[in-house]
Length: 430
Ligand code: S3P
Picture 1 (spheres, rainbow, N blue to C red):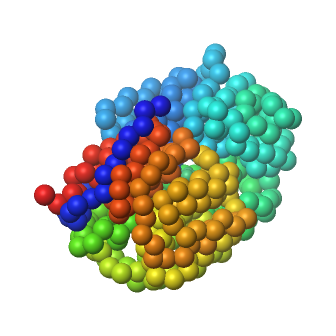
Picture 2: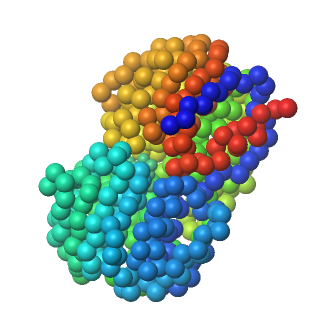
Picture 3: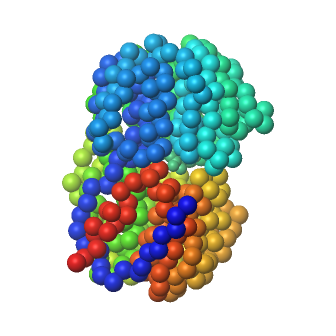
């Protein structure tokens, strides 16, 4: 691990840039494009480490996938013609690959063994394995099959009527995928609305996934037909630059072609509530996925409360929002976010430790954080916890600290935003 030092910014941030493709949508485009018969072209694919893992898996099923930078071309003869892999499947650090693939593998007629890196190996899979077993899935492995590595004996599954107990798009998506490989329709009910990219994309490829508020009805055995996909920029990546623009005095930046799916835009709602200067233009919609350009200008901010149904809409943005809260006047409360404890790292603990090191007034709670602003942040030595979003949060923090910030490692950034440091530097006013 190589540490890197970041100096405070001496200018403002100005200009515009394209944000790399959405991670969640890139994963789904590879999965659904491979399950479908025919040629699927994906434009603006996120060639970060996690999404490349998903590609490698479908190659092991015999699907022909070519990558040229951010363009991907999939030639598939459809899920009925996948071949049984002769090696274990590696999920790396990718929770989305792991959870969604379990739903797919449970219903494909062959045996697979799956494993991940040391972080993923400690993340719970029971949230997917237990409901899949209710559908008659045969999954076994470590700790009675609740942690990776797992072995899956895929087969035709039973349909399910199920109220999903956790607020998780990964769990919902795994169950939607598994419901494609049954004899009858399945019905799922969410507790709170979570990102709905799986539903949108399956419908675009010819499946029948009907949603009504929190209810989802899935018809089995669809003839999935290939389709070209343009992936919008990832709002969860844009979030770091949006917050940078809101934090650094005199900044004015525009992030182009960012996904604005309503199940993902909690960050914008919070910025609005804090009094930020944000505007959106050039809105378009493709395959039910909205996108547009986001302009942010520096402005003094107030504290807010982030809780309840908002949490799934900004779950990955909480670390960077916590940093923003240190610069807002008053007490910001983040609660109902216990899911953060089982992300790439325990993000409640990691954010608390990082902000404390930098001199913020922060308290850790069981399901969130309380941050009292505004505080002057000092520099210091902080950790990435092997977590891409913690590393990027640390780098954005360094823009406004009184002295240098040294980060133990930046290598995890390539998981979701490989060009992050260059993109940030390109916004420095010269
Ligand atoms: C994701 C869902 C969320 C999110 C993750 C990506 C997805 O996880 O944190 O980065 O693509 O479905 P959970 O479903 O565990 O909340």
